[in-house]
Image (cartoon, rainbow, N blue to C red; front, side, top):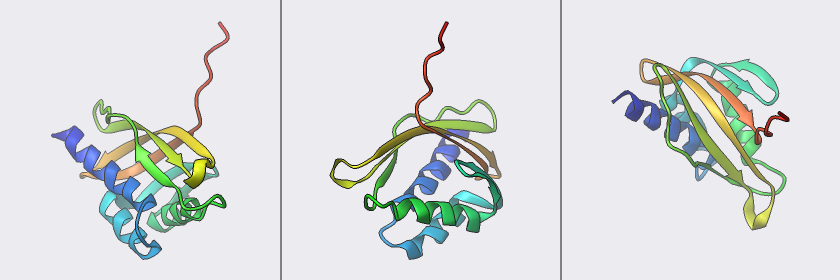
Length: 125
């Protein structure tokens, strides 16, 4: 049940990147995130849905064109933390970015997001 709740919040969060219009982004994020969400993204730490909305809108306005964000793994949830992998692809074979997000859930909503963009290189051992 807990993983299903996390999967629903995560998939709603991801759907904001793929909304048919920018005007739907805030509503989708409000369904997935707490109002005081802490977002650790590529540009540092920010707080609140408005900050996450700015990030999502920036991604939606990628110079290579409007891309598609998809969850490409199962949701792994030990306790109140969950992780999943994602892929963002721009149209026409443009740039592709993959990564892993770690999220914390509170009352069925995401209250923390940590974005790890890019692949992790194998260790040199």
